[in-house]
Image (cartoon, rainbow, N blue to C red):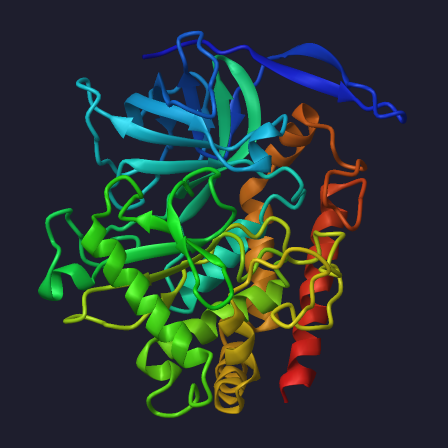
Length: 441
């Protein structure tokens, strides 16, 4: 499926009185990118929140790193189904998408994309308020270096129906899979014995939004656990009973006086995973941490009968890119911040944090990571590598979407150039790590 593409850039001129932007289409002849090029044809249909619509996708990803509009589709050339995704983000002018690769019979088609392991569920994340374009890619890479799975991700340039849409990040959707969240499959008929004990993925997030259409509430603080796997319409009654009973038992221990004994939290959770999860949330001071976009999972009892924290998800408002809840500050612990309105965090996060032995283990692990994964040199090198990888696509993205110098919720700082965005990001991270060095030691 080969086409000649003439790319239309939509230029936005923002008025100071918050009136609707004037849109002027400019015909631009764009030829070459050092990023993979993703081209989607929806056959003239609009992409909706739901249901997913049929579309065709081609991906150009040449081994020499130079991708031309007229090149053959050599990474993927086939059918997909696609929809908008996210909560508030799907209303952006540049929305994120979820798509599934399918065969000619509209059945799941597990494929490798951009060298990622075979699967059929994918995300096209749209950096918008994060004008560095790289916050999520950075934190996911750090997590994987720490030995904690986070979605694999790569920058791409996206076209939909011959229209240039800017820089996106193709990434894995969080799901149970041997190459993603590696836990046992749980079929609807596995309702007793070891079978019913896993695997499960639960998510803290807003109720009844996106994929969060079923779950249960804590008997202690009323916080909601959303079913992520199995899905709400696939999980059996016995499986619901099992995972709710497991969580209730854990929370009862955490709500008691003996939560820090040998029969306390360490019997229920993979402590090291929770330590790493907290460190990643705190180095970024992620405003959504612990209560939104927060996953935990559990395998079968015969494999690992403890609750594991992760994978991490959605850090576009992290690293100083948020103007509420003091999330722009480089000092102060996010986990103990007192919110002045609805708090989505389960009570036991703070109780873990305040426990002396747990805090000591956080300190030891953090100090270990500061000599390797979280060293200032490693973090800065990663950022420099991403900026180099993005190359001229940065200019094309911000020509398409001229938001540099404009406030995009919830920006704390607004800069006129991408270079200034990167300088701010590096400076913020350095100051944050310096504060954590002092505070933990």
